[in-house]
Every structure is written in C-alpha cells, then in structure tokens.
Length: 127
Image (tube, rainbow, N blue to C red; front, side):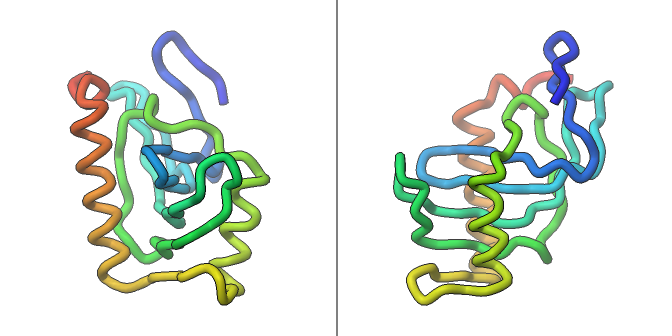
C-alpha cells in the first residue's frame, strides 16, 4: 500500500479489509480510481468475529455478489493471518463456523455498506 497525499493506493489483486464493529469485509482490489479517491473491490467474504481473538462466528460468502466502488480510505491492507483462515473456511467449512452464501448474505452486505456510509459519511462526500 502506498499513500499519495490523502489517497490510499492499493494494488490490483491485493486483499483489503473494511472493519466496522464486529464485522470484517474482505475484498480483492480490482482497480484504483484515483481521480475520485475510490477503490473498486470484488467482495470475497464478510466475517463476524469475536473481538481480540478473531474467532469466526459467522462467515458470509460474497464471491457471487456485486462489486463495490467505495472510498479508498475505508479500507486497510488485510493481514495474512486474517485472510488464510477465512478463505480456508469458504472452501472447507468447519462445523463451528456457519457459512452463508444465500441472498441473505448479499442483503447483509448491503446493510453493512449502508451502516459504513452513515457512520463515515464524511469520506463519502469527497469528489
């Protein structure tokens, strides 16, 4: 990640994370849109975790959901220690983790994005 002034710059295919409360949204960067200070992201998964332990409670499979174009500043680089267990759970679900890839998962994503846009409204006002 490179920061150019107020623009956070991610690389294509890099996995990023948007954290809001107990939910973590992981996505793969498709492209940066620097003139709008935005990041085009392909959602991978949204996880509900136990704070401090990163123990997964619920995992939404978002690989078939719509792409997002959001302010780059809402994202951070995803850590390997976060991404590897989540991707593993998507491909090999464990009994203790509920993996949801239904329409409810996509509805939860839209509610999550709405909550982020309300709580961080100032980032959504730029350009």
